[in-house]
Each structure stands twice: as structure tokens, then as C-alpha cells.
Length: 285
Image (cartoon, rainbow, N blue to C red; front, top):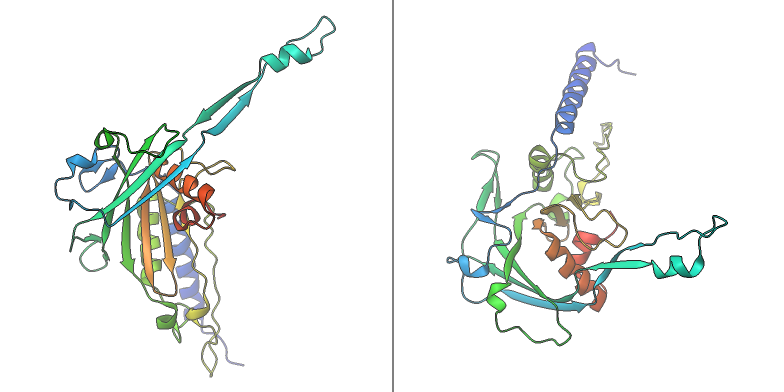
């Protein structure tokens, strides 16, 4: 049996210390929601985006009843100290939020892209899809006459290219994908996502080489400031951030989403199960 050189042990210890220090640095980064994108802030009217084409690349709509937010009541006590049933029942109050008609429209400027990071290590984000949400109280599915006054900037979908599962076939276990690099850059900017736990790996090389294959790895959806209740109706932040990857195609997505965009996805799922946006935002983490 070969003896592991002391230099190798020292190198492992050094790398472990560096990783721990980097992890401590990430703990100090608290999530601050993006206030908008490309010089525009959330809530701006679609009509202020003069560079966008007239026609959207996609439009979706959904309707839901208002969602119950909370139920409160007051115990009205009797002379014996017990709650009087009817008085307490009369104090019952339900509060609701959202609901009505939701319309999402998406626009993209042909050829527009952004680099996330510096010239050498940056990742290209392309295409860039601007999202606008309109929500109004309605019992009939009719577009209001002043639609332009309620159609507001509510999110942005940034696409990037990573390695597909087929392209990862045969790659070593420590191979760093564009998805991995994007995750690191998002952690540096926004801190750790919800339920984040970095799992260490030990790779033992043999004469036959490492038997693990990157094509078999799992790619999680990471969310910064997701909905924190069981209904998952919307985020409580100004905007959330989501990172996802389709391993079959290698197409990655970074999604900035305001609360009304979450509500639209929730409404779509209520109308027809299996909505893709809902799954990205709301599905179990």
C-alpha cells in the first residue's frame, strides 16, 4: 500500500481551511432583493420601456378567487371564564389577498445580452426576457380599457448555456460546469439560497480512473427569498431570485420575480396543474 505523502496531506488541509473561510464569508452576505434590472425598477409601466418591440414573444393569463391570508377571532368570555360560542363566532374575521385576473406578457430585445462577472470569468446571459404583469379585480375575463396603466414590470428571465447531460458524460467528478459557476456568482451577490447545504465529496482515483460520471449528477433549483408559507402564494421580498437548469438541453435560467409574478404562477397552477413557472417558483424545494 502506498503511503500518502505529507505534502498531499498538508495540501488537503490547506484547501479545507480555504473552503471553510470562503463559506464563512458567504454567511456574512445577507440577501438584498434586486430593485429592478437594466436601469428600470419593479412596477414601472410597460409604456416606459421604449427599446422593447411592440409585440410580445409570449402572453399568458389566469383567474383565481382571492386567497385567504389569515383567520382571526376574539374570545368573548362569559361569567364563568369560558369563551361564549356565539359571541366568539361573531368575532371571526377572514382577510384575503390577491385574486382576480392576471396577465403576463414577455418581451425581448433581439441580440441583447449581459455578462455576469468580469471579462475573463463572466457568464453570458442571453436572451434577456422582460416580464410585465397586470392584475385587476374582475368577474368577467375582459381586458380593462386602461390596461396600459396597470401593466407593470414584474420580473426578468435571464438565460445562459451550461453543459447538457450528454456533454457531461465522461467528465470527472470535480468538473466545474457553467451552472456551478453561476451558482457561485449568485451566492457571492445574494448570499446562500434557501435550504442550501454544500455536500463535500471524496474522490478516490484508481488505476481504472474515477468511476463517477458527471452525467449522473442531480441539479437542484435554488431559490433566494422564496414564499415562506405553505400556500406559496408569493414571496414577501421585493423580488426573489431563482436558479434552475434543464440537464437535457443545458439551458440555465436565472429568474428575478416580484410578488405579483408569483401570484400569476399560482393562479396558472390552480387553473391547470403542471405549470412550468409554478414548478420553478413554488414546488417543494
